[in-house]
Amino acid sequence: MAVVVHQVARPQGWPSADQFVYVEVPMPVPGPGEALVENLYLSVDPYMRELMDFTGLGVPMEGRSLGRVVDSRAPGLAVGDVVLHRQGWRSHAVVRPQDARIVPEEPDVPLTAYLSVLGGTGLSAYVGLKHVARLAPGETVFVSAAAGGVGSAAGQLARLLGAGRVIGSTGSAAKAAHLTARLGYDVALDYTAGDLPERLAAAAPDGIDVYLDNVGGDHLEAAIGVLRERGRIAWCGAVGQYNAAAPPPAPRNLYEIVGKQARLEGFLVREHGHLQPELEEFLLPHLRSGRVVADVTVAEGLDGMVEAFLTMLRGGNTGKMIVKV
Image (tube, rainbow, N blue to C red; front, side, top):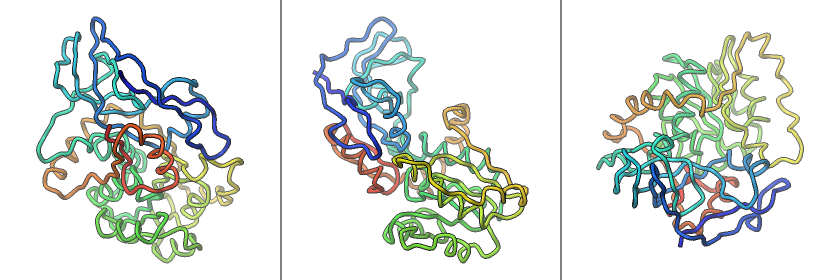
C-alpha cells in the first residue's frame, strides 16, 4: 500500500491539522512510458498555504519531491535513479520522463540540497538577487524571512555575488545569531523586538540598494523607507500575510518608489526554470568546498508532513523545511 495526504477542508486564516487526512491507497502501477518512484524527501514551502485556497479537495497537494525509481517502463528512467519531480504529499508517485529530472548522487553534496539551495528556494534567491534586482558588488542587501528556505540561501548567495553588506530579518534572537554565525549575514534583526524601521535604518545608515522580500507588509514598508535612490526590490513572497483575514495596511509609503526612482518587481520562480543549470554551475563548487551550506530542518516520516507544514508556517524551522519520508 502507498500513503497520500489529502486536503479535505479549506482554512479560514491559519490552517489546522484537521483539514488534512492520511489515506492508504493501492500501490500505483506505472504504465508504458512511466516509472514508479518511492519518495525519499518532500519539500515544505510557504506557497503551499496559498494552494490550500484554490486547489481541489480530496487530493494531495503538489510539491517538489526527491525519490528513487523502483519500477520503470520509461526509457531514460532506470531503476535506482534519483529523480526530482512535483508529486509531493505522498509516499509513491508515477512520473513520466518529461516531468522528472535525474539528480546525481555525490558524496560532498547532500540530496536535500536539491530541495534547498539547489532547489526552488535557492533558485528563488538567485533569480531575485542576480536577475531581478541585478545586485552589484559592494551593494547593501536586505532580506526578510532570512532564516527560511529562500532567506538561508539568499544570505550566502549575496555574499558570493559580492554584496558589501548583508542584513536579514527573522523571528527570534536565536535565529538572528544563526544567520550571522553560519549563513553570511553581517547583521540580523529580530523583528519581534519591535521598531523594525528604526533598527533597519541603524543597520544600514547609508540605506540599502537591494531588498529581497519574502514577507510583504511592514517589512516592505521598512525597506522602502531606507531604500536608496534607484534601489531595487525583488518581491518573492508574502508569508506575513498568507494567513491574514484582511490585507495588511502597510506599505503606506509606496509612493516613495517614485521619488527615489526605485524599481519594485515581483517574480515567480517557476518562470525561471531555465536558470537551474546556471545556479548549479555557480553553487556546486561552493557546496563541495563547504563554503555554502544547505541549511535544512528535516522532519522524520510522512506521518509528520502536516505538522511540518504547520510548523513551517509558524516559523518553527531554520533553513529549508523538508520531510524525510
